Amino acid sequence: MRTIRLFSILDVLRGRKRPVSAQVLADSLGVSVRTIYRDIATLQSMGAPVRGEGGVGYQIEAGFFLPPLHFEQDELDALLLGIRMVTARGDDTLGAAAARVLSKIETVLGDTETSLNQPLLAVGAGPRQAKSSGLTDLKSATQRRLKTKVIYKDDRGQLSERVVRPLGLTAFEAVWVLTAWCETREAFRNFRLDRIASFEITDQRFKREPGKEFNDYLRSL
Amino acid sequence: MRTIRLFSILDVLRGRKRPVSAQVLADSLGVSVRTIYRDIATLQSMGAPVRGEGGVGYQIEAGFFLPPLHFEQDELDALLLGIRMVTARGDDTLGAAAARVLSKIETVLGDTETSLNQPLLAVGAGPRQAKSSGLTDLKSATQRRLKTKVIYKDDRGQLSERVVRPLGLTAFEAVWVLTAWCETREAFRNFRLDRIASFEITDQRFKREPGKEFNDYLRSL
DNA sequence: AAACACCCTGACAGAAACTGACAATCAGGT
DNA sequence: ACCTGATTGTCAGTTTCTGTCAGGGTGTTT
Image 1 (tube, helix red, strand yellow):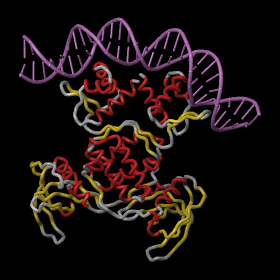
Image 2: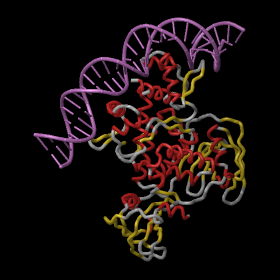
Image 3: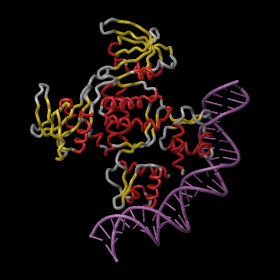
Image 4: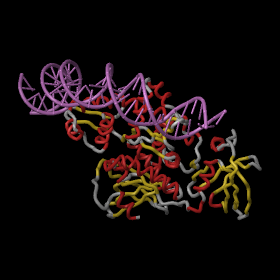
């Protein structure tokens, strides 16, 4: 049945980071290339975020396309609470991303969903990350794997400067902490964002190195 | 095209809290009842959580069935961070619900998703709600709108007892707070869960009353 | 228990959609 | 200009789908 094949195409594309050619799709689904061209056109007409380029192949547009998912009430409660927590704890950028997630869910759930209109679980007002906290920029540096020069003020007020590999950011109750790999010390170092006097993102990229990743640090806890 | 109609059926069911008869679906989609029966069978064979009962009609099974959704990287980051926050801050039950959400998302994103395997944003260890905190039971009482007798210990250690309408729960950094409507005082009252010596859920239900809802309280902040 | 509302499935003829093969066109690279 | 691969249009044959009809079952209300 065709509907199943349309979903299968999305599954294949979802599972691949690189573009997939129509021929590969045709082979894996046992149909002709012409049929794949038709299916892609149908998916696109239905609004699926699939794009293709001559000589390259097809892929899902930047981002993540989740298939239909079913949640129980308590699961949706947890999900919505989580989104509200991020809104409360992150800075404007993170909060805006969370708001967009919420908006997308609201759009599809509509008026029937009481957890949206009449929430049961809320998040208390807490320290909100100011734009000047650097959270967004440090997240970007981390994502792009750019070494970063950090001017840090320790708990006695003394400043120190170092160039580190930013690996990840952790939300504690009142502060965010940047976990980085310090090449001088050859060890992980944590920096509270509220104690970072200033920082400067370099254009030196660092590579993934086993033992020196955020995951390695998180596992060591 | 049939695929579009299958989605349309889900949209109609998603937007209705009450069962919808095959005839209503047939009328709104311009097909025969027999075709709706076939479509429902197809949706069910594809795993959609649709159920029907003779004399009643069709509806989505308890819970919420979200259609395909597309998220940008930062949106998914926010969503996953939120789920991790709930896992860190809630009790076992809430955390389990969050874990199931995460598992569902992991299942569909598979290995390609680095935000899952190699997160950029983490949540610090913090006070976890013990099972004895009552969070899950109070959430249940709130959901079922059952008056609850609360033995409360104020900050001087003195106990007091009252029967209230539990309205909602709020997560602060270190504590959860129950917001309730006190019928004696005719006002909202908040109770930190860690200061609730004990509570007893009654079987007296309370109705929705404008001005006395969690939403009313949240709006007053 | 009876009446009403609604779900369900099989069979069949006709209609609609789909498919693969082939040809033509387009786009990018050499 | 030529080559290669992607894409779209066309067509005949195949497959799927549809509505109608018949027959059977379940849930709710009076």
